[in-house]
Length: 226
Image (cartoon, rainbow, N blue to C red; front, side):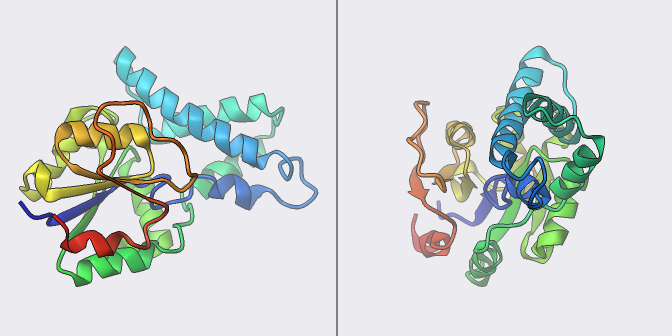
């Protein structure tokens, strides 16, 4: 069946997860030299906590997980600064979109395709991020895992797409920068695109990506392919 719907992961795929730490790293501040490490630790712990909470059956929403991960990262970096913590969490609400994102979404929609987000983020976080990036009008819907209280790559999360749009899995092209997310989506039956911005090796998991791209700029060119 032809692809009729493009579904995007949000964080790391549409929005730059390092953007908050980068924006807060004022010249001469303690964060100026540490922000790359802080951003990396923050993201790693954020994802680890989603997986571990799912395994333990102890769900907390993504805003809480993000704050917990930041607390770990700041302690690891030796930055006990409540004011900085508050600023970083505020900046995370309005992470910058990657430069090609608006044009990519617009081009897909110009080809008659529907577009959506499927994310671990809370509805409030996603509303703030899409509004800040000016892309809310380029999406048919924004789906959050909070509808079911589970995190990706749980199959129940990917099932939200069919429930909302009434499409079969093979009508969906799922786009993510996270290899584990691509694997989960592929296992569910979606056609997958891995956005490999960092030039990393492919994860050694079942259901490797159908396609890999360095960014989203050429994604609309795939729209005529099966």
